[in-house]
Length: 249
Image (cartoon, rainbow, N blue to C red):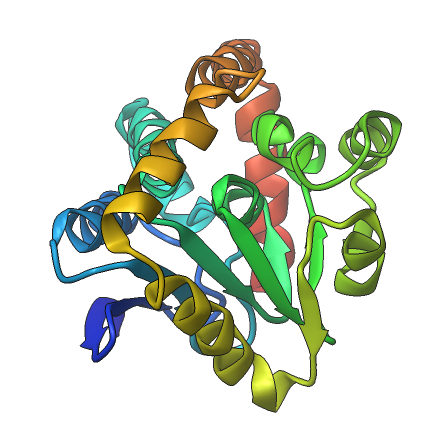
């Protein structure tokens, strides 16, 4: 369990998250994911990375229980820095990253999928940012890469979710497939990329990042500043405590 990397023939590296019960990562887990993605991309044998998860869903964000069980602000700062590192690792990976999403893709999951080069999703996949209900802000930067501006704002304000089918209509999800075909579908796309000249593909990734109109790292860091403010004003702890209490019932 945790984060594992599997190198497959033909230049495909597979990074798998397996952190039961809901793939909500601890501070250490976020940094481990960042390390795994960066190392996979640096490996000259890797032409493309498939990022996926085991279990009930792709990712449920940060481990709020860990945060509330800690004293001081170390866990909050750690979670923010860990998410920042993991999202940046996906975006800056030296080769294309394909996110294979099933079930829930919430909070930090949106940060990962939104920074991926390609998203392939299962029919049961849904995406959302419950941050407002948790007394936090963040990953709207990445959600804006998946949905139009006004929908992104509505999702942040109301905490509503969108389905993989809706994202496919927007063009931000490449394919929607039955759950049992998700890994196969992601690998089919990966194989198409892996069959190209690896030097050209790496330069293509570099070029496409270079023409992005938004600096995703700076934009996300700006959002995180408001999470710190909400915490200082007491809203963060109040909403996180309520979330933990609900889960304990």
